[in-house]
Amino acid sequence: MKLYYVPAACSLATHIVLRETGMEFDLERYDPAKGQTENGKTFTGVNAKARVPALELDSGDILTEGSALVQYIVAQTPEHELALPVEMTARARVQEGLSFVTSELHKAFNPFFASDADDAAKSRAHGLVVKHLDYLEEVFSDGRMFFVANKFSIVDIYLFVVLRWTGVTGEDISKWKNLSAFQGRMNARPHVQAALEAEGLLEAA
Ligand SMILES: N[C@@H](CCC(=O)N[C@@H](CS)C(=O)NCC(=O)O)C(=O)O
Image 1 (cartoon, rainbow, N blue to C red):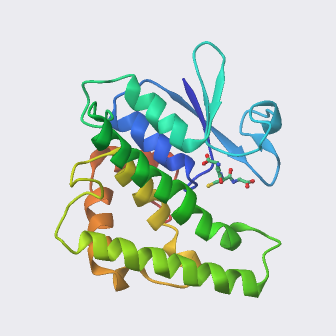
Image 2 (image 1 turned 135 degrees about the vertical axis):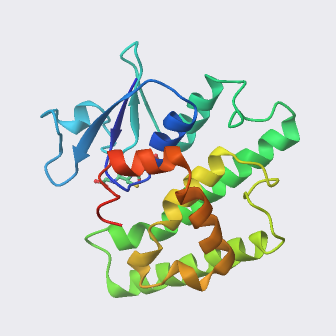
């Protein structure tokens, strides 16, 4: 398998899940400014949507959309703690959390990464990000270690990646004590550190 990624982007979640589950994979970096990968491939030829993550399977098929990718990867290792629960309600809870993080939380940050977003759009986005962080802080206020059912899941990995972006809004994650502690725990995981290092993010930290 090969993961196409942009350092620190949402593709980092797929990258961490690949490492946590012990999958064999290669990485190919995409540079959105050039529209090309580090190997000189035109990225729209890989993913016509021009978005990471994109996962090239050994068959040559390309899978996209981060939420689908992390579920695809953990389905390869059903014995791993990250595999989706078999029981339907527990499984839906993980998918519920994943949807919140990938569609609500992730999307709230978009104006901060869009070159055409004006100050009004950023101000609205800032308010939405804070609202979501307050909600998450409340969820973690019961002392849980992990977001869904207090059990390590793909949702925690995605959440960790998106929470790393909080600084772009001008906010400091340390204001949200429970979320900050969650970030610290996730950051300390060896596979998370390995992914950060491989994307060149440890020097920047
Ligand atoms: N719906 C896609 C969205 C992916 C997405 O927003 N990717 C961003 C990085 S987080 C991207 O590719 N940005 C590069 C660009 O916009 O040129 C998914 O969930 O995978």
